[in-house]
Each structure stands twice: as C-alpha cells, then as structure tokens.
Image (cartoon, rainbow over all chains, first blue to last red; front, side, top):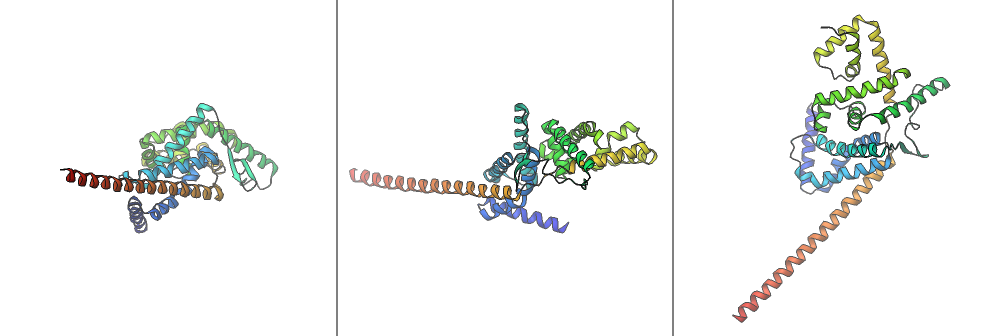
Length: 197
Length: 111
C-alpha cells in the first residue's frame, strides 16, 4: 500500500515535471505505460501497422494535452480513455469496411497472429493439436464478430485484467453498462465455442 | 436465495472474473454446492477462459522499439519547429521594437 502510494507520488511528480516541459519526465511517463498501450492496441486491432499508429497518436495527444490534465482521475485512466477511443474508432471503421487484419510481425516475417501462438497443452498430440488449431481459428472468428464495445470491454477485462468499474470510467459509462457488455460478449462466445471445450 | 440452473450458468463467466456482488456470488455458490451439472458447466467455462488466454499476443520487441523511436523523432521535430517559431517570434519582436524606436525618434525630430 505504502509502495503504491509512493509510486503515485512519483508519478504525480513526473506529470508535473512533464507539464513544466521536462522531456525526460515525459519519456519516463511514456515508458511506464507504452508496453501495455501497445499490447492493447495489438490485441484489439491485430495489425502491427494500426497498433503503431494508435501508439503514436495516443502519446502525441498526451503530449499536446498534458497541461489540461488536472489529476481528476488517474493518469492511467486518462491515457486509456485516449487509447480506447482511438482503438474504437479503428474497429468501427473496420466494421464499415468489413475488414479484419490479423497479422503479426515475427522473426520469420509477417504471420497470422493466431498461427504465431504457442500451442499450449497440445503436447505434440496430433488430435489435440488439430483441435487446438481449430479452437484458435474459432476464437478469432468469434472475437471478430463482437461489436467494437463488446470487444473492447472483453479485451480490457480478460487480457488487461482491469476491473469493470475502471473500464466503465475509461469508456465514459457505468460499471453496470460495462458488466452488461462483458456479459453479452461472454454469452456470444460461449454459444459459438461451446462445442470446442 | 439460491439460483436456478439457468440463472447460475448465465453468471459463471462473471463469477470467474470476480465481478459478481457479494449476494450474487453467494447465490451462485449455494447453487453450485448442490448441483453437479452446474459444477461441470463451471469446469467448461474455465476451459473456455483458458482458450481465450491461448490467443493473447505479446507485441514484438522490434515493434515497441520502432514505436519509441518514431515517437521520439516526432516529438523532436515538434520541439524543433517550436524553437523555430520561438526564434521567429523573437526576431519579429526585435524588429517591431526597432521600427517603433526609429519611428519614435523620427517623430520627435519632426516635432
């Protein structure tokens, strides 16, 4: 608890220094959050190019608007509001274009993101590996079929491990609305994937 | 009050996420203790969660590095243009003061 309070004090000091034009402080703030921002964008958008664009735009907006940050909420919440809005815009555009990029950069080049996942538990068993591959394809399909808001809430809760209260705060809605969204998302996935597990 | 099987199964995902209220969780747990089929359904829900975990990706380190380098470059160019704007503004200010001073002097000479 004391450590968390200490971190918050340090972060507040960093933010104030960055607001005063200290570039090192700004860079430290970026470094504190940029991996999780990139992970969120990459998992949601499944495109290295789009994730890169969201990263750039998000931190540029932070840079330009940092002086408007008044400590009314945590910096994490403020930053994620920016990131989630950018990602939601991208997902909505894709829904209109009916596109679903699904590639990832690996040391062997660009591959489908689901093919790059380690087959946990398959243990070389051909039958299980086939099932595992089939399940991953299905999970990808079902995630792509969720609405942008359902997808966002699911990603934030399942992969980023954020509480629904915080997710609601980030998305400008209530905890209850975020809960309903997560409920719908998991219902859809259960009915689509029920035969695979 | 304990839930029905249908109500319980609808809340299994939220139970695993730890997002049920105290009363909701109590009702689900009470039902699960008495219902083997719903306990089996909870097991399937856990497997489903594990399947989701299997598709999470970690962005490549090369992408993170590229993002950081590009951001640093963009911020540096913003800084440079701000500096240039600052220099230009200072030059304009100096020129304005010079013109004001000259016109003030010539005005006084004429007067």
